[in-house]
Image (cartoon, rainbow, N blue to C red):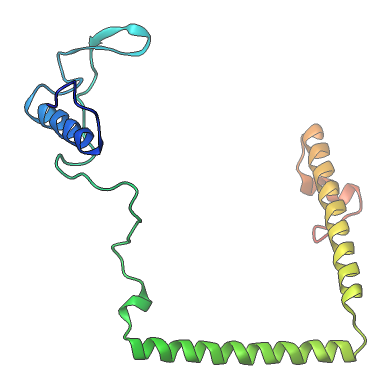
Length: 163
């Protein structure tokens, strides 16, 4: 182990850590069977299970390194030519879809639809859904109070199950 007078730089920390790991490997196991361990609230006694390591000793990895999946993506497996060709095909498909949407918008505008009208209808739909959700919640609470199912309440209020 390093001397106590030495300043703890990055190299000395890693060597101290490695020395501690070596001692652990060759010395007594931490919290092993038969050892006294002060657990929660100062109780002492044998530990219920020995110390288990999640990674094998000697495998120290850089924890700040980026993750690299062991599974290759399909694009990484393709050749450069096939990859470019697939991208070109995808671009062409997106251009066709963009043109079709532009034509549909032009048709709707020619028929007299406007963006403001669409936004107003969307707002009304949101309000309708909020009111319907509130009604469903009230029906559920009433059914719970009466000790019956919500389905049994529908005929009592002249509602259909499709409402």
